[in-house]
Image: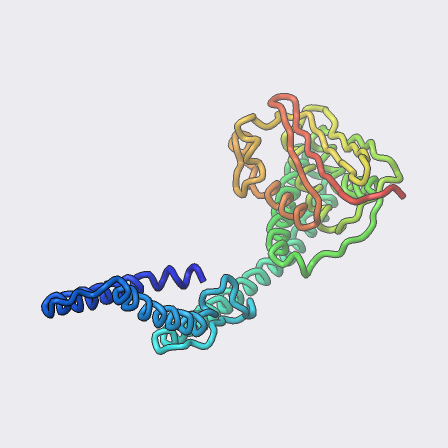
Length: 336
């Protein structure tokens, strides 16, 4: 009602300006006939038109009321406007519906293109995995005939290529996360041990070693594939920034009520203080990324996105020269 009255202010002002003009003319006439109007007559001339004005405004408000309510009824999936009460609104509604249909058509075309690109990326990544597997098998077969430094360098480069393809694949899958996850109950220690086994050669090659301190009875409810991706990003960073230091990457867990905290700590170069608030920003590489020149700036960003989708949280703390600590929080849990 307030919005309606606000729209009618110009009309009300115009109405009373005309009323004053009529009263002024009537008063001049009365003076000409030497019989000025008394206060009662003037009041009558004001009250009677005002009553008609109120009736007019009420009728008009009832006619336009549906356009002034805060939330108009309708489906979120369709353009909706109430039946227009006059020609002006009818034309506006037609124009709005045409724009909405055009927008929907463009949106559908965009979705088709996006889905086509995602499908292509996923198929391409799977196709690239085959030659990588063949190269890994060939390297293992011919390792004895190659210099140790050459075989280690080739194995490292193949690992980087495989991790990069994994990053691309999961980034594309994340856009359809609701169709591609299944939450189950897992032993946290077993999950971490399987994950470390996948990084066994990387740990050995980079002279960095895992140290697992997780109780057998700690369980988590999560998606194995997605949480493995998160752990892969954290461990890959820990190994990369602590390489050749002969230090350990510690995996520790503790329970606090219904929350379980998994911390992964390395003793590498650490993250500069000014870079720490932005480690989860997409494509942010920071000082370490410029130094090592192997960072895409997407690993921790995607890890955070996955954790939020799974209902977990991820936090990073670090000290330059002392290492980095990443903490994953799993909520509403119990021990086995």
